[in-house]
Length: 138
Image (cartoon, rainbow, N blue to C red; front, side, top):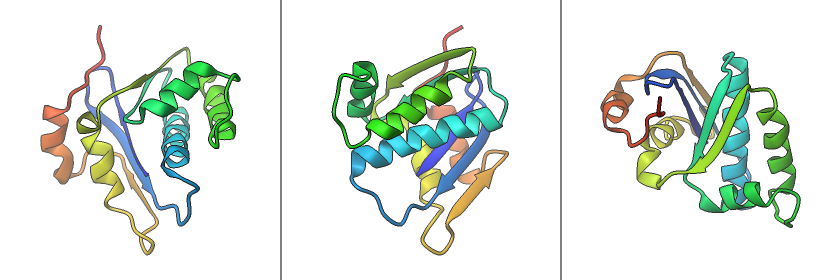
């Protein structure tokens, strides 16, 4: 699981990655990544969050609220509770090719190196930062 926290200009603020030995399914893992993203943002003191995921199903389940039966329902509830910590919160889908930085960070952890933490952008994501698809609107 990889997470990147960026400011409204698109600059790298923090990144993290964590190895999970077991997961129920890809949907649950994506929901866990979203939850972990919000936890990182809260720890970093962020006030306005635009959470993006490349899993359209997670966003659809989020929008359905309590009106769904998903394996990820408990994690979605945790996301909902964490979202209340912020002054402004948005949650949206982005295509997979717009999530390359998080994937690059995720590739840095393994069963042996279980976690990574970056307070500045590592060299291997610098090109991705400048070519990434998303930047917050003013």
